[in-house]
Image 1 (cartoon, rainbow, N blue to C red):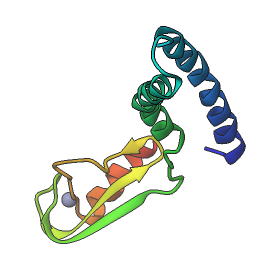
Image 2: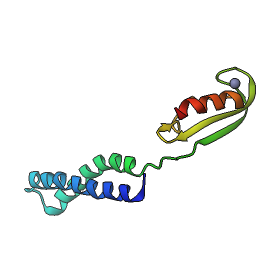
Image 3: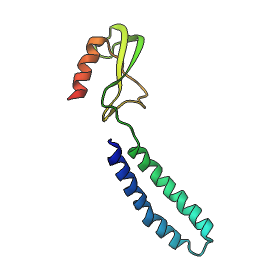
Image 4: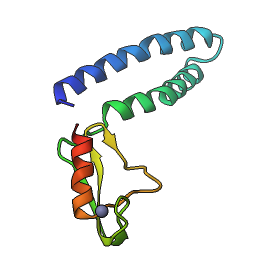
Amino acid sequence: MKLLKKYTLYLIRWQLSTPILAIVLKLLSNMSTLTATIIANLIGGLIFFWVDKIIFKKKSDVPLWEIKEDVICYDCHKKTKGYRIVEWGNYDRTEDKNPQYRCKDCSIKKMKMIAK
Ligand SMILES: [Zn+2]
């Protein structure tokens, strides 16, 4: 995501927190301003942590590879040096619990599939 687009999104996101803050502060108007603000910010934080995470997620334009010695290729079952694409644009296997490694040839085929 380009910086200007990210910056604009971030400013819009701050405006989105305005109604939430206003509503919560209104609902909690019988409380002290400090307590109500703490609660409102807590609610905002619970929501916007996830929104900000999406806004600031860096997407790589080039494939990010992980290379591992002595693995069994996921496709041809050959014992080899293994390759896998961890992240590439919208393709994201950073949290993959069972990562699939492939030999050089199979990993190139897989890469072409992802590129489509
Ligand atoms: Zn293979």
